Amino acid sequence: MSSQIFASISALGDGVLGYVVPFLFVLTIVVFFHELGHFLVARWCGVRVLVFSVGFGPELVGFNDRHGTRWKIAAIPLGGYVKFFGDDNAASVPDPNVVAGLNETDRRHSFHHQPVAGRAAIVAAGPIANFLLAIVIFAGVFMLHGKRSETARVDTVQSGSAAAAAGFRTGDLVTTIDGRAIGSFSDMQRVVSTSAGRVLEIQVDRGGALLVLKAVPALREVKDNFGNVHRIGVLGISRSMAPGDVKVESVGPLAAIGLGVGETWFVIERTMSYLGGVIVGREAADQVGGPIRIAQVSGQVATVGFVALIHLAAVLSVSIEAADVDA
Image (cartoon, rainbow, N blue to C red; front, side):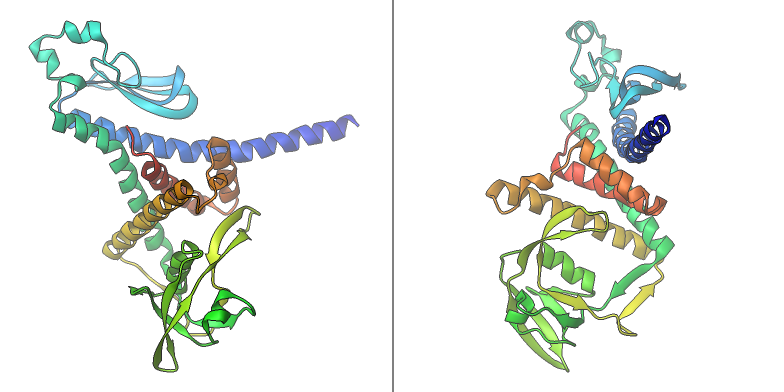
């Protein structure tokens, strides 16, 4: 009996660590680069940085650099901050006693005495750093694994589906949706998944003839490989996996950066579209997740591999900033 209890406790501990460690890894990357953005631009503007902290609360480990900044890792790893000269706390609220007693030289090194443009640049640098981080990660993944794509050719059409009602046939090649060029099946999925209930004008190449079909993606609940439920728009078609319809292209540095920018923009666009949908009642708010949900997803993605976990860090780096562009 005691061995069973021990095994249960051990399994629970492994499960918790399986979530916590990947979550802290992802969160630390996102927080570090966000605060690094504030830090670098503040230094560039001549602002004195007193503390660069990953986490809150008591310091676990740290050191002082040659400029007098205290770099530290704190006990509560749920965020971070940069404290500037003249700040009263981690939220950059000015200390009125300190600010009132500053001489002209010290004022030049205080965040609160910087010109409006300087303060704006320092505040904006955090989100910008996260966007750049995402672009670099996405670009790196493309360079490492290449760009895999399947042509937007229809293999099967589900009976009674939106595609069947629109007149899709096996072999149709989707070329544009609402005038937007479609280069792969994933391009089509991205448009369709965010267009539930909306009429789409879809141009297809059918044996060399171009036709325009009108389809309304149905809103369905689908499960991913981890059992998580997502509500997305679907047409009810499957992709062709025939030879020639699936390819993997090697990607050079410049092309990878372009693809990284495209991936980052897609995450921004999808995040803003979803939040707008929640406001108007088109999307369900239960798809939004807090730290616990992020930890769960991080643990699940970590089972796939390191590259997948880094990819998640890029997605979160963008989506968090797109949802709440803040300092």
